[in-house]
Each structure stands twice: as structure tokens, then as C-alpha cells.
Amino acid sequence: MMHDDTIVALATPSGSGAIAIIRLSGNAAIEIASRNFKSVSNKVLSQQSTHTIHLGHIIDQTRTIDEVLISIFKNPNSYTGENVVEISCHGSSYIQQEIIQLFLRQGCRMATAGEFTLRAFLNGKLDLSQAEAVADLISSDNEASHQIAIQQMRGGFSSEIAKLREELLNFASLIELELDFAEEDVEFADRTQFKELIERINFVLKRLIDSFAVGNVIKNGIPVAIVGEPNVGKSTLLNALLNEDRAIVSEIAGTTRDTIEDEISIGGIGFRFIDTAGIRDTEDVVESIGIKKTFEKIEQSQVVIYLFDSKSSINNLETVKLEIEKIKNKHPQKPLLIIANKIDQLEDIQLAKLSTEIDNIQLLSAKTGFGVEQLTDSLLNLINTGALRNNETIVTNSRHYDALLKAFEEIQKVQHGLETGLSGDLLAIDIRQALYHFGEITGEITNDDLLGNIFANFCIGK
Image (cartoon, rainbow, N blue to C red; front, side, top):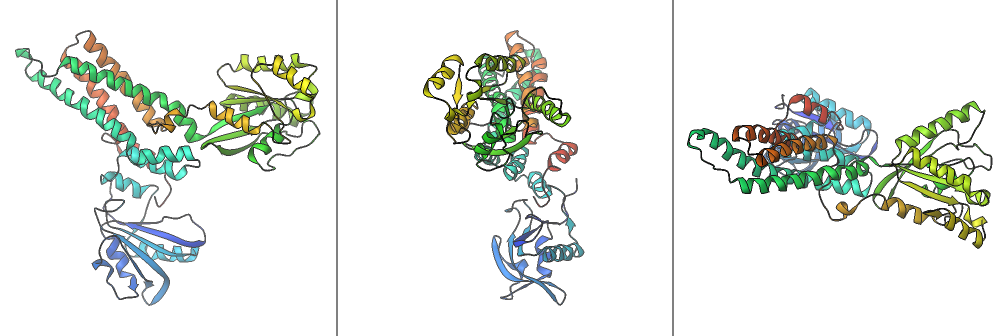
């Protein structure tokens, strides 16, 4: 994998803006930038200290392209571990392309997706899990996903894995040493201490594996389907949650014929609400398609809100109970929130009847906003955020999750081998496999295909 040339890319979003940043990295980055930079104070860029900023102009022969600020970072004290130059220019698309094309003519190459972070990994500035956290940080759109990405980028997850791997490696070395003295029947690895280590590794791996259930929904958002009969206020509830008129609201039943989705952050957690078509028997072809999609969205959601019109149903609550049971029976694993809407149109005695006859019911008026805050609190309570609040390591990456599962499986084999008195050579095989899967997470064991798959998901310029 060649990474000894100099690469260039736009590091800010494409398009016009107040400023743009163009980034170069490679051994010749400062030299190439210096050829085309004229300092206002006649400084020679290549002679300046690292981590300094200089005002001047980008020059193409005798033509001035733009007045810029150039920041220089000399190896190894840079993001990539190479010489890095960052040019802050005016945000005209024309200026951006002129500067980039100039450096391409000077011998730079356009960076591929994630190549700056790839070089940081290859040069030992980040391990692989930290590099992946960079992409998660860029894509984070709520407080929780941002917090997890920051912790992982700072090495919280990888340091925990590295510590376990180091301890396991020490014992592996002692067991391998025993194999060299097999004829003398000596033990260098204390089996009691080894059992304690394996139990501790088991505990940590189990906690990390279990955390993925929370981490995955935090990273990707939690899909919540709002379902119920037509005209019960599903679209009004969606608008109340989003605090905007996102869905069309009408007294006419069957207004929503397709699913409408939008995301909001509640307590730092991303929720994706799905307003579905009302469930009823209909001969309308388009509405029937919408109802079919409703059932598909229930399958895809992680939480279901069943909404019903309390005013029209107060004298027929048995039908409501039947619908609730249908959803529970069909989706027993999905949390179900039962919401009685339009309670502003009921009398106190009717409200008491609702609470008495239907278990765990929540009262709400989507029109006035009453009960919306209680609903959002209920949604948050469904997510176990204890680990997040305690700043514990949370796994969000499916690749890490897969490697942890495989490592856990091998550690289980080692534990069973210790309990049954398995020979050292066979124990060593399982330990090596566990070490291999630990190394996959941090990048101590990797290949070009894996790196290609990971960094292909990055944006250009990062």
C-alpha cells in the first residue's frame, strides 16, 4: 500500500462558503506549498517552525489566485504523522478548484476517501478503532453518539482491549515457554492466576458485547412506529414531537397514505419517528399500499406507539384491547406504548375509566401538547443509558462486535481447557486465536482488504 507520495484534498464541504480548507500531506507537502506561496512578510515557508500560521498569497507563476492563511505541521507531530499543510482560502468553488489543480500540477495526487486518517493509522498516530471513531464523530448527530465517538477516539475502548491483550499475551508466552521444556514437566504459568485472568477477560468481554445493544441504537437512531386507526391523531402527534408541521393533518380519514419519517434528539438520543397510514379495511388501492407499508414499518421499528382516539373509543374499549393484544402477540419482543389521544375532549369520569380498564395507558392530547413530555420520558426509559451516564465503554461498531464475539468464544474454550486440564499446546492454540481477534479490533492484525472497506466509508479530505 503506497503512502509515500503527497496527497491533496478539500477538507471542508464542497460548495461556496466564507472559507474553505485545502489539506496536503506527504514528505513534500511543505516544499510544494512553499513554491506557490508568497508571504506578506517575505518568509520562506519551508524554513518556518512546525505548528505556525502564515499570511500570504497563493501564486500560479505571475497570477495571484487568493490571499490565504497557511498552517504547517512537521512530521511526526501532525495528524497523519507526515508533513501536513492546511490552506485556509476564501470559499469560492472556483478558488478551491484553482488551488487544488495547481498542486496537482506540482506533483500532488488527489487523496482517496479517508486517506489522511489511513495514513495516521499506518504511521501509528491512531489505532484502527480510533480511526473508525473519527468517521463516527463526523457523522454523529446527537449528544450520545458524539460522546461515544469522542471516548473511542481518545482510546477508551482500544486501551481496554489492549490491556486485556497484553495480559493474555504474557500468559501465552509462558505457556509457549513450557512447551520448550515439555520433557522436564515444569509450569511457568501459574494456573490459578491464569484462571483469574480468564474470568476477568470473560467478564469484560461479556459487558462489551452486551453494550452493543445500546450502542447500536444510539449510533443509528431508534425507529419508532406510530400506529393506529385512521384519524386518531398520528400525524398531529408526529408534528407535536417534531414541533413543526411535518405531516398533513385533516379531519378526513385516510389522509396519510404513505409513511412519513423524521428524526429528533430526545435526551441526547436520536429517535426516528414513523407516521404510518391508518389501519382499516379499505378498497382504495393507494391507501391499501400505505397500510401494507405500515405493517412493514412495525417490523422494522424497535418501539411501537399504539395511538387511539379516546373520545370515539370510550364506550368501546374492548375493541381497543383486542387491537393491543394483536400487536403484543405479533410482536412480543417490541416495547409497546399505549397512548389515548384527544383526552382534552373527555370528562374526568371518562379519564378515570380509561386508566382503570387499560393497563399502562398514557393520556395525551397531541393537539394541545399535554402528555407529550411524559411520552418522551417513557421513550428514554426504554433505553438503558446507565452505561452512557457512567461514562463506560460502549461498543457501536458491528466489526468490533463480531471480533468480540469470536474472542469471547475462544476465551470460553481456554476456560474449559483449564477446567479439564487440557495440555499446554492445545491451550496455546485457543489463546492465539483469542489474541488474533483482539488484534483485529485495534489493527495490530489487518490486511489491505479490511482497510479498504473501512476507509472507503470516510469522506474525501479526512
